[in-house]
Image 1: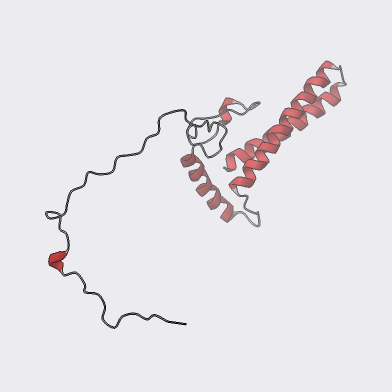
Image 2: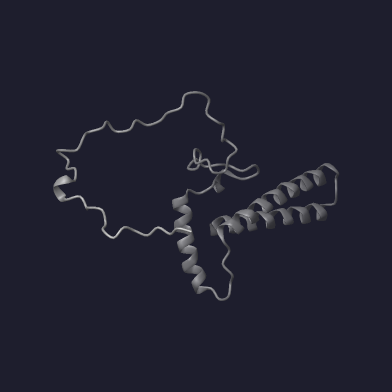
Length: 151
């Protein structure tokens, strides 16, 4: 087996006079951006697409007063919420991702409860039963608004 070691004398270091300066440097044209022509892949279902990120979106069954907040508004609310939460005793902090998942679940539960109220109206159920179904719907909507305000 043969082992090679470094040479005993290092290669000569270029002196300052050998280094290129802006006046002696060869000027190459700057690289041109690479554009592709042709169809662009559709990323409308891609969650990473930020094209519509700042546009307010309305979820089905959601009033226009509870539109999605911009990241800046959400950040300000989160700072305010942290300040408030620091004062409250023993309440566990909910992450934004958990809150959004809970809001999605609540949204589908609200839609199902609305359908139940409508079917109760169509089936001529008792007034007490209808009031109970409406109370459940209102409670779900209150939970949704509380979560939305926490974001």
